[in-house]
Image (cartoon, rainbow, N blue to C red; front, side):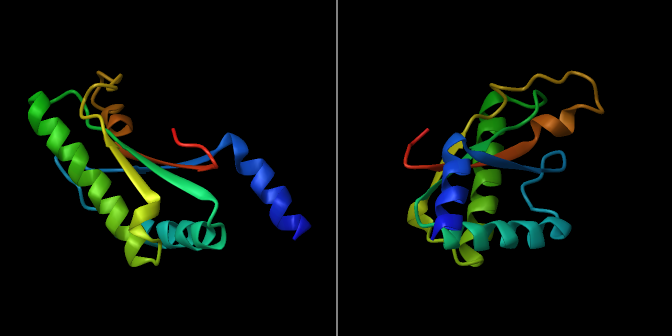
Amino acid sequence: LENKNSALRKLENGLSMSVYFRTNGHAIDSTLLPHIHELATLINDYPELNIQLYAHADHRGEPDYNLTLSKSRALSVRDSLTEAGVSGNRIYSHAHGESNATNKDIEGLIFDRRVDIQLTINKEI
């Protein structure tokens, strides 16, 4: 029990992981699925965790398209987590489209095409 409490205290400030996507894509690369399943195991071990998904797109494309694309990306991550056993009622999705895009060079655009998974204890973000 002490180890669990220690781990929970470490999570008070949150833990995050990002899933990156191809241009115009919302499918999760199959090489990432084992990591998402590993994360799901951690989530299931700690029912106190809140799961927030923050989905983004790069600046290319129309704003409405990018918002829809980021929603699809969040749904892909949500589906992967629920398929790995995480209850869907613990997952909260936030689609941002291109509103947080910061990269303008072609090599950096991948960092804008992502879903950030944030885990926190006892607080909603």
